[in-house]
Amino acid sequence: MMLNILVIEDEAPIREWIVYTISNLSKDFNVVASASNGKEGYELAVKLKPDVIFTDIGMPIMDGLEFTREIKKVMKDVVVILLTNFEKFSYAKRAISYGVYEYLIKSDIRPKDINELLRKVADSIEGITREVLDENNSEERIENKGKQYSKAIKRSMDYIDDNYKDHISLGDISKHVFLSHEYFSRLFKEEVGENFSTYLTNYRMKKAEYLLKNTDKKIGEIANEVGYANTGYFSKSYKKCHNVSPEDDRY
Image 1 (cartoon, rainbow, N blue to C red):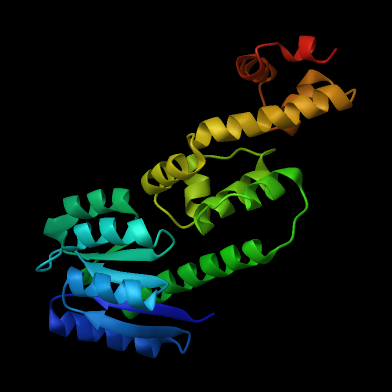
Image 2: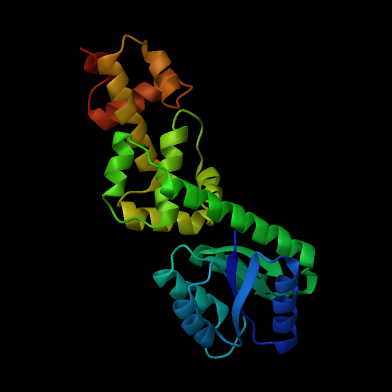
């Protein structure tokens, strides 16, 4: 798929090298524009709606951290890749919480690194597009379609639909939607109204309730089918959610 890319870097030689490198990696990578500061980059991003943004941290007028924070307010699904120096590493870590997916050390950047990262982004976006277009008639997904969620949150809910029987960690699902776990956690709570772990538990308990009341499966079997290896922990979680033990809720 074609990726539209914006490059924001105040040092002209580095900016020009990145633009040149990306443009020559693949016909699928299209640099739509470049900017020398965050303010100019923000205006271009809002206008051009790129899929990916490479941005430096230390820039005049609006730095990379402020840019990331502001652009994520209006373009939640855009992939932001941070360009940084070793001495700016602490800022890079903070930027991850603002929604930056990955950071690259400028002195170490190689064309191979950029190519691998952009391929990962392309694969992720293709996956999101396929899932958004997929018609699924499950009750939970019909309910989700009636609400306005960002693509990342919609995809995370679909991931739970498909994998609730297995172990699911915050790290697993944040990688699946191509976001840092800090930013994903905040975005999920903001859009859904409850944190990820609470949503997952409630989802599993809803599935368990259905199995209890509509099948003759044993409690241990039901626990396994909704992602719990420990039957005792499952029963405790069920009672906390439904105010009744699974044994008593069956009849």
